[in-house]
Length: 85
Image (cartoon, rainbow, N blue to C red; front, side):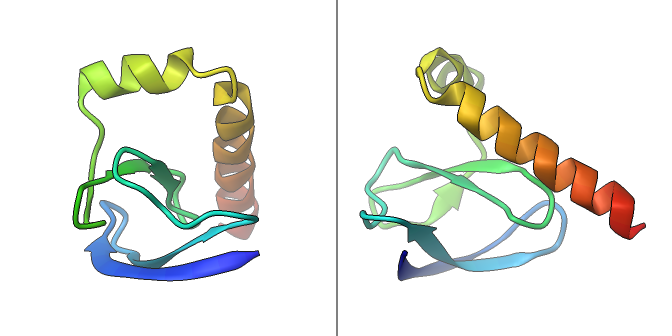
């Protein structure tokens, strides 16, 4: 697993996200990130800051063949949050 420090981003849940981890890549502009605390998606900008995806970006993200994997991760995060509360 490779972890890359990125400019800090405060998620809508309040979590401070300042790193991106992936098994074999560093983030590139347009890549999607997932908050491990709440499951919110963000998209990396050119300078690796992050923004909440636009509706157009979400259509593109959901059309990706790997979307079901992301959706599974989001569901696991939500289930963990419910269990912890």
